[in-house]
Image (cartoon, rainbow, N blue to C red; front, top):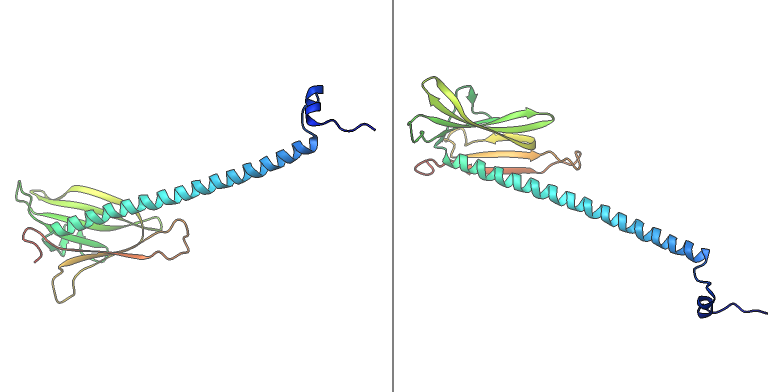
Length: 194
């Protein structure tokens, strides 16, 4: 009876290689490893995208918050109207200090604009000219607002601050209620708060 040659003997005789069973086992192990690696890669990409989106939204909101506070703190007083704009829960008309060069009156207007299934916010700077009020600056914030309202001082006292209440549209889960955010900025003007 002839016995199976040892590995060293197989190498000497030129019988190198692996059996079909060993090859199938290696292939199965490699398929599992590749599948796990691909799943891990996709999960890491999704986490990266979610983190990048949250960071971008946070930076946009911080920039918006800083601009809103800067404009409101520069304003002298809340004005009932300027041109075609009237102060309401969707519009804030703020009187700015006069133009340093010409001495003409200036107004900052924040206006809520309906857009798709939510709102956008437009900021205008109106300047008095001999022809009337003209828009000297306009910017639209493309933040996906779901709700957006302005609040001012009580009925018996003049407004000393402007409050903006808003909620953002949630793209990841539209059924989830978005948390309400509040920005309150005091009116300042040249001599500080009145």
